[in-house]
Length: 137
Image (tube, rainbow, N blue to C red):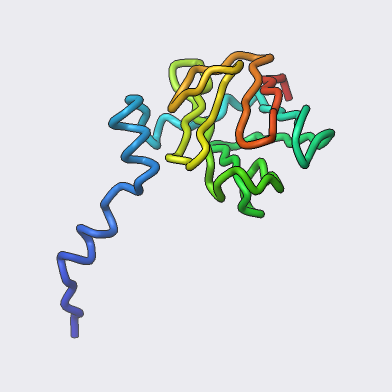
């Protein structure tokens, strides 16, 4: 016999995550825009903070930065959130989006909720400063 499915289950499953909602409403970025160009990678060099000297390389999107161990850029900085910020890609540009962190995010010394990024930009979260670099694979 067939199973009866509760339509509420499917409605809840199709709801956007808070991250997807913020990306779309505040910045016009949709989750399906997040495709890393196959010939590029992103490199983060930690230039200040508890992880100074560390380098993280990401080849897939979205790129999460935070204290979570499974983040693409996991930082041991107690002043940043578990999921502090994310990097997405749209219209041939990378964008940083602060995910509602308590202490905020700065790009090149300016506090932002979201910003287009360029190679060489400095991202500050808590006591950590990271250099953002786009490189060929």
